[in-house]
Image 1 (cartoon, rainbow, N blue to C red):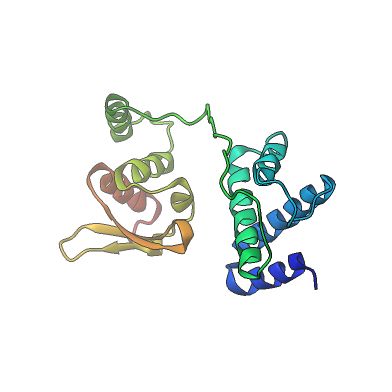
Image 2 (cartoon, helix red, strand yellow; image 1 turned 90 degrees about the vertical axis):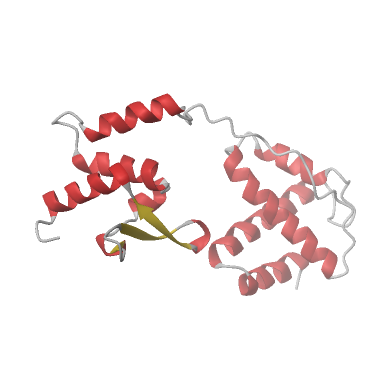
Length: 196
């Protein structure tokens, strides 16, 4: 069995399914890159990982390159534990994700947004107000808001509300729903579920 095949079998048994998929794909791509250069893993020049990352820049977004980099690092680290000499530098410069669409709001902009949400125009959907309100007021991520279900909303002993959400990395978080976010959520629940 080749070293790559052994690593793939290893990764599938010790890593979560999605991670194993990304890491093994990255390892395959790296081995193909090294082979195309006429090298072997054991005889690759120290900057081989950097050259591999640079070769990905024209084909992938920066946020897609980072998991590939960590997958290759995992593969090379595993090779070292198997006694294979790896002369490759494991650190390299990753491309930066300059996301022109991501905008960070300042305090005044957040204040205007909250004021708008408290009395939006009649044609602005209440569900959109609740979605934005939960993200701003409770710190929910977009993916968490999209996955919310009414059953995740729980009353607290003091008459408040909390949300139990499954966040990044499968971690459970319990978040309070306070202030305007609570008001918007209660208003939406009364409008869509009169018995709630």
